Image (cartoon, rainbow, N blue to C red):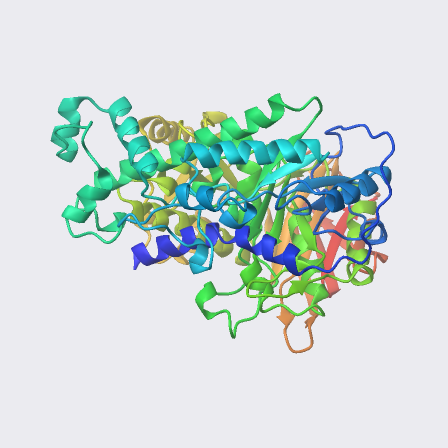
Length: 615
């Protein structure tokens, strides 16, 4: 089962490529004549947290209506062409930016049939691999011919005048071709002596070793049948290392041929551990994220949920606090989402923004299996206008929390056994939802693996919190273990999920600790509460997750009582508590009482989303 789950993850990761090409091939252009751009100054100043972008090639009026800064996944998907170049010039003339979305693993972006076959990925039997089983090849990122092709293609995007490049299929690594087998041998040779290769993996001659042939000799049908789990682990390390090295080379080469500022993003699907390894090389992240309630195999009858993705956004902020993150429902989810469910998009925007991230809006976005999806500008514009007009409630704020979940990249990426790594990642994600539904304010603290992400945990990181939670199946190195021991000696509490029988029992552990969590509420699990402070004032976000798919509206929540422990730096005396509602933008006054250091609020009605702040 673990093998099937892991394979499913890899398949989903590479899906986005075919998606957008089919979208472009189907998309009908309203007007092929765009004005030629006047003088335009390229700059990275547009890239800020909360920036709103649109997927596709929307008209200028659409961008203005929704308050977007520009487009993404929009041009030059199949190479440089006059039509897209005219569109780029048109956007630049109107002060909008363009982020292109070149694929990196699809054969249909070239007409060179020999290149397609020569550089295609190979399965364990040496046969070419079809991209998602369709009538095209999946292309190998280790093949020098394909690498050269991609570098030339990215040069075309520079010539085409884009402001940024989104690398789609950034994590595509599934191949058994000779180049990949050679890369694995080089990796083993650089990490192990001949004696270690023999004792650990039974490899007597690395020069003649072929991992594909080794697997076949053991009756394997994939790498998951490798009888030596340690060798399988090294195989994945080698795969990721080679891919990251090429992505870095691709970015550096593209910048070297550009005489202007050009930024890079990548589709880090779901922000999964094997996608986070590219973070150090990117300026910002646009990523597909599963929105639907279950796995994609059953999407034929499931509907999307309105959210509860706080843990993903907090992970993003912990991993790279200086970088903007922009989420987008993956195209599988678009198959079960109708265009009149625009209130869900407003909810996703609000949830992302209250966590410091943003959301990508669709204009003729490709839907998996065919068709397109467009979010009506007049429907979503009240939400985007609200968020843009009230940016002061979202920027330069500090989240209030006494609890933190530790994310450890090594534990969730590799571990001793890959299935344990997947379990560790799953435990981390589930913990976030568990705490959110129990209304326990929390943060994420991040520890990199030291190879792909060199972000080390410190005792100061731990001391910001009263409780640290360690998810299941973590394999922490000695440095982190020693830091946690030091943290405990200084009075901190560490809760290890491996010592708890049921995940839900972690709530009892937290509440029995005696730590003042800073928040008490009678709200149901379908209400989210997030607390910030900024310049001596409190900012409280309250969001409704109770969505009725039949009426395509949110069920109102009533009489929500919220009690907050007031930080010492905040004095509410003489101030008025205001509540702004989304999407109406109406501002009302909320009565409150202060007894000691406790602030008590009652929200009469919550429709979709409220932001409370003192004036």
